[in-house]
Length: 277
Image (cartoon, rainbow, N blue to C red; front, side, top):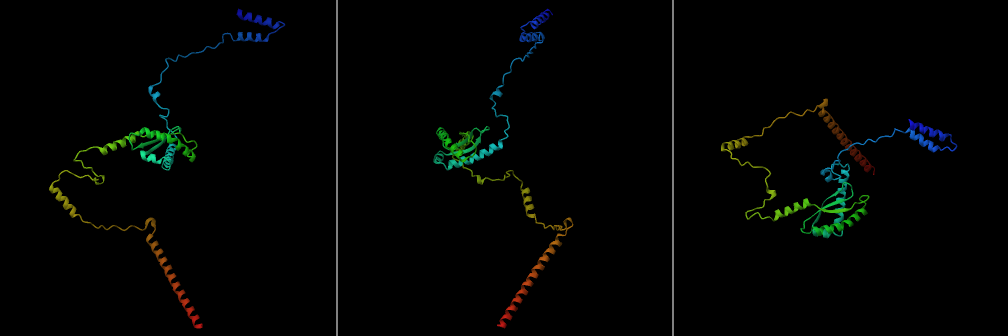
């Protein structure tokens, strides 16, 4: 209370003095009124900060997300496959592709549409590094030609990647073809394989004779089937067809009669003209 009284005394003296300092008055009023009203900050104890899991660090940014543009990506893959194969076949480096046995297996566009991955396989062995360098050098020309064709607004960079799965399958087929199966091995033709299984279990002679007798005794039995009804939904379809056929026959007979009469009349007119001459 003594402090507040002293403040008011100083204010009173300042107010009644000749040189009034309004800024000092305002400052002292703020100190008096704001005494004991300072806000206290509440600090919350958060504990030990948790570290990220290893799975979260190794997970890619695209994992676990469904891309709504999967249809667009598939369409782009097909489009790039068609154009790139056409450019390779009709290009200047087609002989090198054929000599190295390079085949384009598939094409995939990255989910962010920033790269086009071209997967290739080759029948030649021990030439992967040379083929990869040749393809990487040729990627720039392919991209330039695609941009000239205006396949899309901005053609992303092309990167050639060897398809390891298909190359391993080709290697396995090659090893199987050159494998040594022995002297007595005879390769089996796939076309001669039987599609029906045979029964190798033994059957009694009595049962065999019964089966043969049953097969021989089978006779074709003629069964008289009832006629198909022609009055479905209360309509006599047979009568309607007969009337239609009769009407067509009647009109055909009329046409023949009229045609014959016209011929007779023409002959009479011609005969009369001959007589007059």
